[in-house]
Amino acid sequence: MYRENILDHFKNPRNFGNLENADATQKEVNTLCGDEVEVQIKVNGDAINDIRFNGRGCAISQAAASILTEFVKGKNFDEIKRLERNDILEMLGIEISPVRLKCALLALYALKNALRKVENA
Amino acid sequence: MRQEARTINAQEIKKDFPLLQRKFYDKQLVYLDSASTTQKPSVVIESLKEFYEKYNANVHRGIYKLSEEATQLYESAREKIAKFVGARPEELIFAKSCTEAINLLAYSLELKEGDEILISEMEHHSNFVPWQQIAKEKKAKLRFVKVDEEGKLDLESLKAQLNEKTKIVSITHVSNVLGTINPIKEIADIVHKNSSAVFIVDAAQSVGHMKINVKDLDADFLAFSGHKMLGPVGIGCLYGKAELLQKMKPFLYGGDMIKEVTFEKTEFNDLPWKFEAGTQPIAEAIALAKAIEYLEQIEMDTVEEHDRILTQYALEKLRELGAKIYGPNERAPVISFNLEGIHSHDIATILDGEAIAVRGGHHCCMPLMSVLGISGAARVSFYIYNTKEDVDALIEGIKKVKKVFE
Ligand SMILES: Cc1ncc(COP(=O)(O)O)c(C=O)c1O
Image (cartoon, rainbow over all chains, first blue to last red; front, top):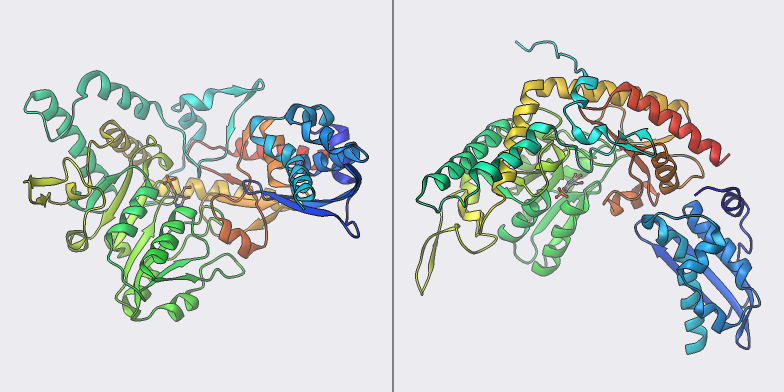
């Protein structure tokens, strides 16, 4: 599970930090682990213009957030809404034991809820 | 005269536990999560099998010989378990778990608006949430004894919060996170001198690890789970002083807890059956008595000494690796720790790859985690079947963890 790319994203997270004037901010926590991921997005029409995340927790949750933010920049809402478990696992490129799945999916969950906020605004 | 404690041959003891022979990823399992649940020796597993093959019948009901035998086994189990903690059989109530026993108390002890319940910051959710909920329902006030820097209960904070409104004090004997062994006798004394409250001890982490005598401790109630002391899951116990139990209303209603039922009213059964509604976990109770026999053969002083030696050894080795350890030095065989910059679940996952079973996370003590200022910790816990070699395997495993995150 702790391949080079995962550890690299954990130690050097991409898109880490805050956005000025974010259109939506969404934080999710995994109460079992205490993992936290907050996603901030800026949108342009129905596409993600820019994204940042903040968080703390296990390597899987933080690396998944980093990898996801890289992937979704510039993508439109429909594409993102279609993302599911297997897409994340593919991006991570590792096998995840069932108990750790929640960690891997936390960022996606936050992102989808952030999109919902934008759409309902 | 107290004899010198004998030492355990854990390597030999391990052979009595079939599960500990398992391998994961081609490596021998190193089980370091006994604070969650202990593994079971063959005698306990056999006892369950034997009951269903030879003695299965409902108890207190059948007129036939088989039911009489089952009842006899079940009630002797109660006697054995009661004696083990220094109680009389009618003071030992069977429940499904320590959690259920505490819930029984939360529901059956009388509380009214303005009363105060005092627990501590280090309580397991099972000695926390029931009190929080019942306090809300009864408009009682829930208060908390502080935990000091070292991870011990602050007895000044205990004293300061006791008053004439305090009706219930419920404190854990051993912390399942910090390993702290709370001075129960001293606490009981403080509680009884400074209030009219009943004093409850959560003994989930202590009964299987040290000699306990409820009269000595002067506890009014004491709750524990069988599965944390070599027994099966599904059986727990509540000790209570007879005069207090007599005054309390039943927790669950149904069969077996009655003397006489008419269309108008029900007369409840005597102790302890008044608190045991419905068919109880009979085989489990008998198997728990077997577990106790097994522990008695080793002797509790020896168990305690073995725990102590392993724990001190592990503490020293973990410190050498720079682990941040929570809780006092003198402690029960539970060690929670963190490694700088590494989440406890990453530690647990990497150790699992070495077939070393440890816990990560909040350990059902979220309020304590917030006091410690952390979201979780890795935890190792030991029992009679753990060896120095198990600790050495853990230490090698942790070196691997550190290497991965270098
Ligand atoms: C201190 C303490 N109290 C209570 C419990 C609850 O035990 P059970 O889940 O068997 O009811 C535990 C279990 O982890 C514990 O460690």
